[in-house]
Image (cartoon, rainbow, N blue to C red; front, side, top):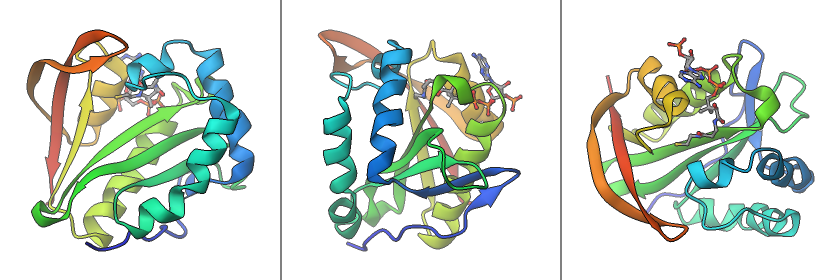
Length: 181
Ligand SMILES: CC(C)(COP(=O)(O)OP(=O)(O)OC[C@H]1O[C@@H](n2cnc3c(N)ncnc32)[C@H](O)[C@@H]1OP(=O)(O)O)[C@@H](O)C(=O)NCCC(=O)NCCS
């Protein structure tokens, strides 16, 4: 199983991706306090604490080395602020397939940052990891997540009924996918 490198120099129109740093933990956890829906829409079992985020960030090198997970901070051209998190996860190397996840801190939403950040990660993953299929899952009522995905060429393939058990309730999940061009 290949390891996952940290992409270098990914930026477009004032939006950049960089590795997560321990000092992102405060802003990362604060996003879940500012938007109590965030943990629910991303399917987290509970909202993360700042210490929990710090531990999560410390685990990143091991997860990358095992080829399991790549989490990156969304930032601007200064590379300083933490504006959100984009992830490559659920890698199935044999099938050249992975899933992308994304969320922004509330103040960064609605300005095109999400679309640029996700397209940077998707384009890099197709080119550098030679993936052939990238998937996105979301709940059918998440208009922003669906619009972002379809604006990047992801196709809505269908809804899996009651697929997940999240915070004690069964949740329908929409699957979107894009194939390598
Ligand atoms: C989903 C999210 C990352 C989108 O980021 P964003 O920067 O606000 O999105 P963008 O401004 O790049 O917009 C991308 C597309 O979505 C559309 N859009 C944005 N917000 C929308 C909304 N609330 N409803 C419908 N469409 C929306 C935009 O018009 C744009 O479409 P276009 O390219 O055809 O014009 C952000 O809203 C977020 O963090 N939401 C909470 C977490 C979440 O739901 N994550 C996904 C879980 S699966």
